[in-house]
Image (cartoon, rainbow, N blue to C red):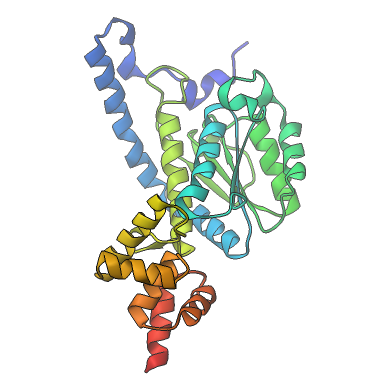
Amino acid sequence: MNSKLGKLLTEQRNPNSMHLDSSSIREILEIINREDQIIAGEVARQMDDIEAATQLVDQAFHKEGRLIYVGAGTSGRLGILDASEIPPTYNASPERVQGYIAGGDTALRTAVEGAEDFPEDGQKLMDEIGVNDQDVVMGIATSGVTPFVLGSLNRAREIGAKTVFFTCADRLHIDIDVDVLISVPVGPEVVTGSTRMKSGTATKMVLNMITTTAMIKRGKVYENLMVDLKATNIKLEDRARRIISTISGCTYEEATDLLIKAGKYVKVALVMQKTNAPVDDCRMYLDRFDGSVRDAVEALEKNKD
């Protein structure tokens, strides 16, 4: 009997790496590097779908909804990694982006064999974490067939959540009803079936793109600096002063004074510096414009005229 799994793109042999075991260290490294250069081009070809997924996430965040990653193995770990980096990077609630892996937290460090094989576990997870119609559930399965992930997506869709499916399989072989399908077919791995390699890199690239863009649209960045920062220790106070000084052109000492007046909130200090408005007005306008420094400054300047 022929194996259906053996026909998956992620399970095919790569003709460019047939002689790995007899290659030198330098040759192996060069083979891996050449194959990795394929990834960015494949991601670029899927930009329409990545944009559509990001728009869903942006809309969810605007309504206080969540982005929930679901995966198994490497895919699950990468989802959890991306989710775990959002709070410290963007001063966002850890509830905003969440990651779950088949087999639970134990599977982060130790393989839990067979955990991904039960769609009912994915369905149960969606109920346990209270997925609702304000959320986006993004299933990650580079092979395209992981039962735990497919079960999660089916249940999320029944509940009314928006759904996104990321895979490195050819979209023609994907049979699941989701709002957005992102297929990045990076081709066979250097080591056959080792999807922690090209597929894992493609996954991390796309997840980073989606959450970074969504955070920028939530006002977490001004120009290209992380400004949603409250200076709560010596290191953060120094960073906050440097950010204020860099953006506004004021001195480090002036930035220190602004930060004190702003209650140690960088965004408030920036709006104060750019508009000379009272601190309470700056806070009010930032709230009105979902934390956007640029929009708050423009609105305050217009009110002066």
